[in-house]
Image (cartoon, rainbow, N blue to C red; front, top):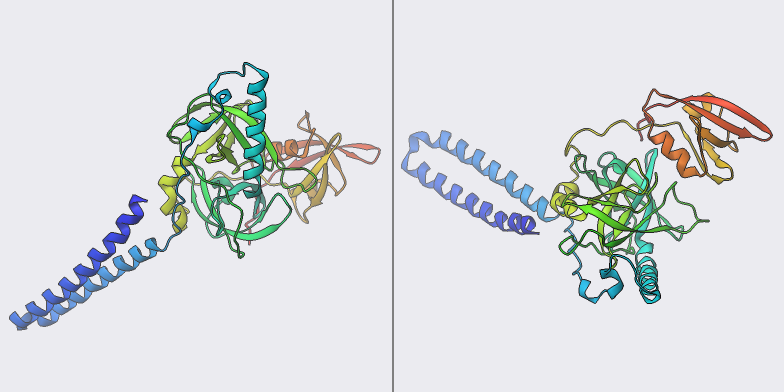
Length: 378
């Protein structure tokens, strides 16, 4: 916010500089007639530079303002949240009540995100449709996307900015609102051991399954990143981490070796990068690594992932996969849900070959799929 106020104030100084530059060039022209042409050219050049700076400042002033963090009301939390472990049935009931209240209030703002051939999650943080997500979900600025709300409604959107070093991403819903949104928070009163809620759409949006809510605790945190034991899976990337007040304090970014030790971009990082993200910067940090693509998606279907779509001319189609096939193993690892299939595919490197065990009717097939980098989205 200080940066935005500074830019708005600086506009007035640039306008004053333009007036003074013009007055000075007029005075010099009268006193030094022999240098009139050269000085007029210099004055014009200076005025052009000032106009460019002024236009840049006005453009910054027109950027969507960063939402203010909702005030912390930690002192109002039930005593159970101040304990390392619940010590009574009343503590457990208090935690249950709060989890239900927070999840019910914030769930309408948690969206499934589709950008190009990738997918993830996100959270709407303003009534006019600003959406926080992960940088690797966005990919790059100005890409069209679709956002699906838990009730099945969908809206068109686009990516704004990406900070690759911190994996921050910002999107905007381009359809007309208003939209349900969640409040952003801060880490000023956060503590290791705090209970938190991770929400998202693992495996992609599924209308038959409610939004997935997981309760966990903060293991450690810095101003840039939080580590929690909230289980998250592929498809959760970009989803929100809430404190027990219902404020967004992080965005899911990475799964560690253990699914119970996961990482989230701290909300403070979004505040710091807000102007660049809102301006549509896409070269903040190192280039994003290539993502794997096979061109097939599916849904949960015991005992694995039943394919609901196989794209034409995709690696999956060339390997012989068909809609209706049930993938039961990838590289000898059992697939018990569609999220597992998505995980092993996205963690592969383009050019790598995956060995799939596929059930087709009464047959059990062994198929090899050579993973590729995703084609450029339109």
